[in-house]
Image 1 (cartoon, rainbow, N blue to C red):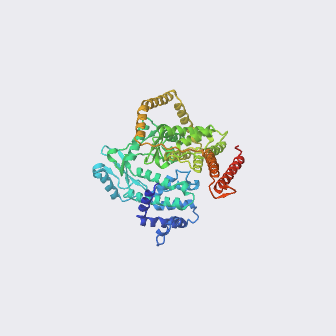
Image 2 (cartoon, one colour):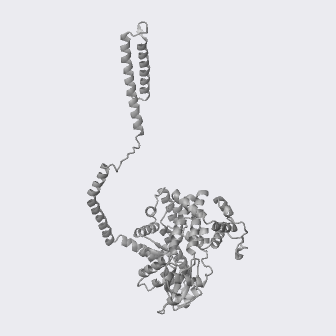
Image 3 (tube, rainbow, N blue to C red):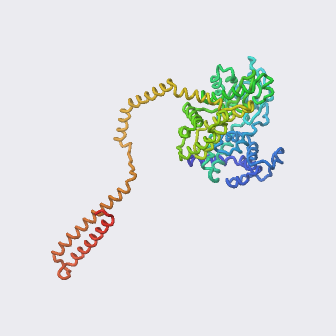
Length: 563
């Protein structure tokens, strides 16, 4: 981050002094006053007394991580979402904190019904009475970002209308600016935080939540998922009504279903928990390994079951994306872990990371140690969540930075595995993961794929050969015009350079010595006064100097053994 950008963000943060006061007060209330002092922001603390909410006043035995969760819940929607987002990063946070963050409550009281109607009419450009034949004023669900009302269209379709909370975009924008400023202070004032780079986490979160606040993006996600699961009778994606959707309003098909973890009602409605677990896991793994576009938060609240075992995915605001090459490398990581091949794992990690690996051999050793714990164990007994989380922590120690989609992918697999285990205590994710990995391997090395990759490589080579003459000519023209300069840096030539200087110095001394001898001889024969015993003093001095120089040169040569 450049200096100008940092100054700008600092300036933006200080525009929100009142909000800083609220944040500081909440942190002190939950026992984090020392953090304010270390970050130099204790001056924002409000003078009035702050009390904990009534249901938590007597909770003096709460752990540090539970107090973090309570503080985030009190700080509002943006901080709750940040906590949920950060729980995706076992490489960044300790496991106990992640466990606490996973319990964050995202349900808040609904906002005023009249305001909900105003937002619908402002976004869709018509009255609620014209848009819907019926509209239930009281929402049936409410969360930190939006609330959902039941309605009916003119064709009789029953729909769910999700309406964004008033001014939530501005509130989140202010809080994100403050979060970034606090993250920068943490990096500057807390030892070790510059390695963890909390600013990077906040920047990723800010980008993700901005997309989540744009319901037109979520509407497109619904349409893409519907295409990906077209013809699959096991999965149902709610229809989205684009005509009745906008940036702050999204209208989708209303789903009459059972919450996936409500086992009693699920069985009463003719469902089979074991079959639902299989279908849910298969659906998420297909999204990852086949489609490359997946539901990033498939928790129990976002999955309903209807018509026996038909699974419905809800709330597609947060999704993950994997490129074909990333999917291949993810496959290589899993194969390397199963086949006890640490070199394969490290190579795949190096290709997926956006910084160069350091201490590659040490990384291979630590991954080998991890693999040793699973030697001889049946694939059904391997806990994929534990393996992936431990792998992420090893990556964190070695400061391997992966693209955000990789962490969302791990979170999706871990989350759906947790849901499946509630349905079927004997569920094993590795058992369901294996067929997808094998399919990817077969496709990767199939004749069709090899021919396709070969033809692309050949095409690239043809383009290179075709463009080489013209590009070479352009380069030579730049060189001639002086727009290209070449700089050479010699390395490893210091000993040669020193030896060369010694040789030159000796030649110079030899020339000086010869000049003194010749000059002194001429002076001696010219009888130039003054003289001693008939010999000119200047000539004698010249011979003396020549003798000293010659003797020193002889000693130096003998000392270095270079006669």
